[in-house]
Length: 223
Ligand code: SF4
Image (cartoon, rainbow, N blue to C red; front, side, top):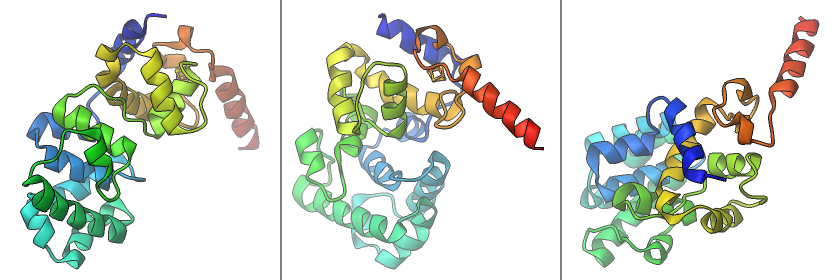
């Protein structure tokens, strides 16, 4: 299996960039990428983008967020959901970054996951998007697609990360999250994936075209 070729085929069909990719291309600020990744938990890209932009218009440094009124933070990031928990987290993370890391986001996975509310996915996102360090952040899209295309057979995202690292050459790790997030939003959707227009259909053991056609017919009959 030529993994690089499969990733190229996916890349060629995708349109636009994911929110984190866009942010990384625009600002290259590890602190902003860390905060935006925390805001992205359990919400869609569009909501994360809106909450991030609203927040950074008023508070865009660790200093400002650490000193901000938590209710004001809640108001600004409301669109991202779970805003009370997230507001308290970004405030606390900002304080720790200031006090323990001199205002600089650490480049180290173990230091990152010690920050409150920062798990493996967020830490790996910071490594990839802020520092261009090879890592594989596994979110819901990466987990689902890797299993569908048969690269891994895993139940939990943490197992997916280690299985993917075994399989994928290290020089390709950095592409996986960026491509699979967009691929999962545009083609290999959670429900009714667009297998008919999928560029890697031939190498995917799970072609849902027939199933989708059956569902469509059933729906048509009902109407
Ligand atoms: S063929 Fe369908 S299930 Fe397989 S990767 Fe493509 S869209 Fe996803």
